Image 1 (tube, one colour):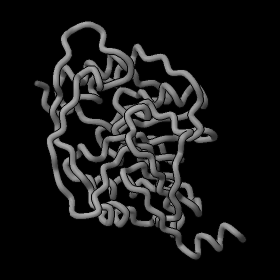
Image 2 (cartoon, rainbow, N blue to C red; image 1 turned 135 degrees about the horizontal axis):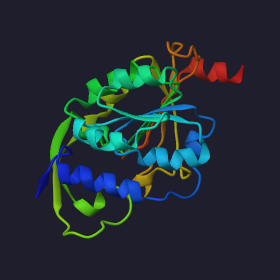
Image 3 (cartoon, rainbow, N blue to C red; image 1 turned 180 degrees about the vertical axis):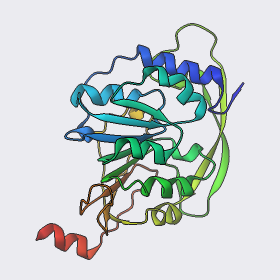
Length: 245
């Protein structure tokens, strides 16, 4: 049994599978995007897909210390790995997109981490596979096979169980944590080509529009998109009016 995302065998498996992975196809989300903060981006799997569409894109992955130590071997002038959100944001400067796919529920303080990510003032924030609860926050033990972690097949070796704590996040607390953002719409997004898309069970989309200009790039609109178990829709009257002007 492997316990937690800091386990060296788990990290090495994800690293090797990422290096071997050869992505195909396009990813509409990163079209015309110049810089991305990828929270929980492993060894850069999402970057490998994005750079096919946007070769000049700059990508900062925020990960566990163990993953950063291993994946840093893949660093380039356009791909860097960080354990700290603020340092990743400083390296990027202007952030076009904050992307996170199935990661926020595995940190010790999900809501506090959301606030820290919002403080980076990305022009757009996109969340996938976030377990949202209508009630209060809760925790559970989740297990998966080692082979299910990272892209592609497990090359050799015996498969093992991986155990970690997953946190369900209160819907109200999650949305409220996005200071400077407000909910504007929802809908399905079948075009999403994130690596973990094949594992998605329910696909709902939530967009948040900024109620103040992001500090880093002075844009007037920012969005938060969320894939979760339940579809939600909120819209600010002022946002609708502005979009029609």
